[in-house]
Amino acid sequence: MSEDLVSFFKVLSDANRLKIIGLLAQQPYSVEELAALLDLKASTVSHHLSKLSKVGLVSARADSYYNVYQLDETALQEKTRSLFSQEKLAASVADVDADAYDHKVIRDYTRKDGSLKIIPAQKKKLDAILRYVVKAFKVGKRYSEKQVNEILSTYHADTASLRRELVGANLMKREGGGGEYWREE
Image (tube, rainbow, N blue to C red; front, top):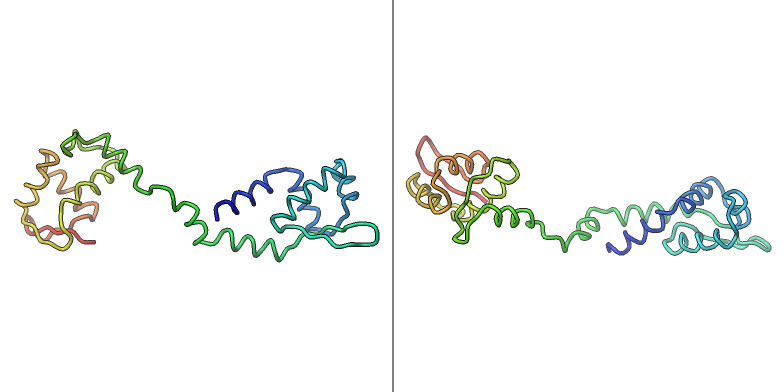
């Protein structure tokens, strides 16, 4: 899929091809007419038309001795709808590691034993660290504040800050002051 998208944009990345599309959007033209309008050689215009035809943007019809080219507006709309559908755009990044940033932050802020060197001040980095730390808690299981502190102490001595940040980021829920804590999915 992403190859179709890249091919489509490569074809549109040439200024002369965009001019050809613009002219053909107004009316059909022959190669010679387009060459005269754009001050290009007919062979250059033919080359551009060939590329535009391959992605389905233009079509040709015979008119006596000439081929007359026209913009295929229906194909353009279908191509646009198809290439830019949410599913296709999502598929174009399927091989991207969505957690790469978190992995980098975790590598930068943790020691070999998994404990934190420091608690990051920057929000995005802190969020990545909190997503890492919250994995120590089972979803749905209730923990006392003492149990939460014991688990968090394996990550950092400032358990109160970690606990407060986990609750503030909605990664953990808390019941009452010093009551039970739990992780929701």
